[in-house]
Length: 354
Ligand SMILES: [Zn+2]
Ligand SMILES: [Zn+2]
Image (cartoon, rainbow, N blue to C red; front, side, top):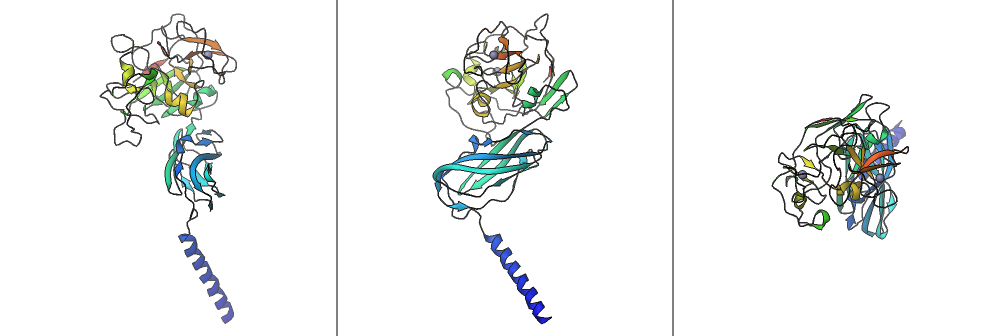
C-alpha cells in the first residue's frame, strides 16, 4: 500500500516535471534565419471551399544557421478559417533553404486563408487561395478559379458573382492604416511615370450575372463605362476609355504597383494587364477572369509564351485553352490599346449592378 502510494506520487511528480519542461521548451531553440519569403510560398495542392484539404506549403528562407528544430504547434488560419498549418521538423541549411508546413483541414469558404508564421527571428504571413466550390454541380470549372468573390452561385444558366472589390495585393491606394498599403513611386505600366491620384480603395457591392455557357451575339453590344467583367481576385475589369470616351492614356500614369487604380467612389479596377495575377499569383498565359458575356480573359501570352495572333475587332480569338480543352473564344490582354476589349462584347452579355 505504502509502496504503491510512493509509486503513484513518483509518477505524478514525473508528469508534472515533464509538463513544466515541455511548456518551457522552445521547439525552434537556437534555430535562426535572416530572411523568410512568405510572398513566394508554394502549395502542393489547390484548395476548394468545403472540401477536405491536405497539402504542403514550401517557404524559402535565407541565412539559416544549420541548427535542427522540432515540429511546431498548429497555426490556425484567419480570413478563411478551418485550416491549420504545422511546421515540419528538419535541420536548417547553412544559408538558403526551405521550411515545410503541413496544411490540413476543411476551408470554411472561398477566399484567402492566412497563416501568421514566426520562426528563427523572422515573421510573415502565408496566404492560401481557397477556390469556390461552384455553388452546385454543372458549373463550368473555370469559374471556380475566381477566388476573390464574396459569393459565387450557379442556376444552370448564369454564374452570379458578388464581389466587394478588395484586392488581396498591395497598393498605394489602400488607406495607409491598411496592412496592404505599400508606398509606390513608379514607374508604372509601360514604364510610364507615376502620379498618384487622389482616391483610396473602398469596399464595393458589385453583382455580375455572367452567362455560364457564352454564345456569340447577333448584335455586339458596346462595353459600358464601369464594370465590364471580373478578375479572379474579385476586382472588376474596365474598358479602354476614360470619362468622355477618350482613351485612358492619361489615367495610366495613376496606375499603382500592380497597374490599377480606384475611380472616384473608390472602386479599384483593371484596364490593363493585372500584374499581380500575371506576375505573382499566376502567369502571363493564365486565365485571369471573365467579361460580362461569359467569355474568358487570358494574359498577354499564349501557353507557349508567344504573343497572341489574329485578335479580332473585339480583341479575341478562338483556340483550345487549359481550362477549355474543347476550344473557346477568349480575350487577351495586350501591351497596347485597347488592352483588353475592342469594339464591344463578342458574346451576349449578362448584367451587372454596381
Ligand atoms: Zn480607370
Ligand atoms: Zn489565345
